Image (cartoon, rainbow, N blue to C red; front, side):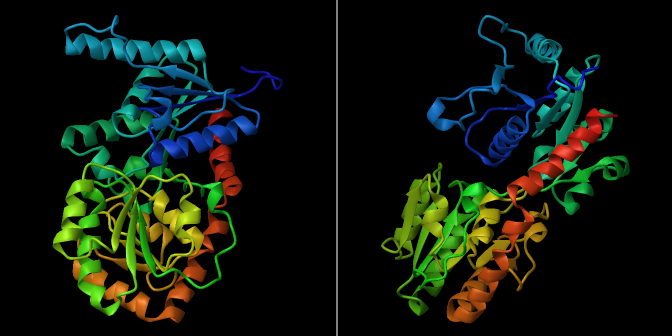
Length: 371
């Protein structure tokens, strides 16, 4: 047992700190706990070049769990066993009171490798559960191993029903906190005639539908442009698509930028057209900025956790281009309606205020550590 004078020690276990939604959530939480006086360790399998990763404060220890070249051998089975042993040694050596893990197999590894240690495992599902556990074996393992953890965190009500009744009863729903950069007064001036989106240029984000819908309504809104912030493997395809549809001069793929809030806050409309998401950080940030938002109803329930259709945004079915065109036309043609949506959207700043949400996580962790 630790004395009252000793710092409680929390560890986070994730694949890497490569810039992405789950990684940012973990870094934000790690920084919060550090600021609250906890000792914090970040355990990752891999390490990317510094410019591709989120930066941790120097006081947070970073530990790599993947096998080194010297530790690898020709047997996949032996390599798996050695990975389990190495992660188990990390928990024994670092001795955190609690470890939070996320994403697919990482949760399994955390439950198994913390056995016979003093570390309490907490597993979390931050994405679409069906994608993290896509086959019968993965789902079986989740249903067997999750109840062995000391805590289970989900982010949407819908995601509970992916798992068995035992997990449904054990799990809690905790939201992501808002990026502090988006805690700001709503822009009240004349809006730029720009439609914006933020997200990786991949098939799941379905920017193709976004560009096709924009092309379909372009003649009614000749002054408007579409700007997509993000990078990915579909850049060339999307550029060619814009050319084919005759909108290349009005569609911009602006790449990754550091000051997203500044870039999007004066826009007239934000679009999220993904096929699947957990609870999208980009969507949270667009709402907080006070933009009128149109988003697809992703299967996880992430959109409906944040939005009420027609109140603080517009929700459309996934993959429905016609519904997107109708929604865009409604918002762009009715400035009063768009303004009403944006004002309601900005209220999410209070709901997901970082200190408030992070303290919900802290209270949950404290309850587990004090058992």
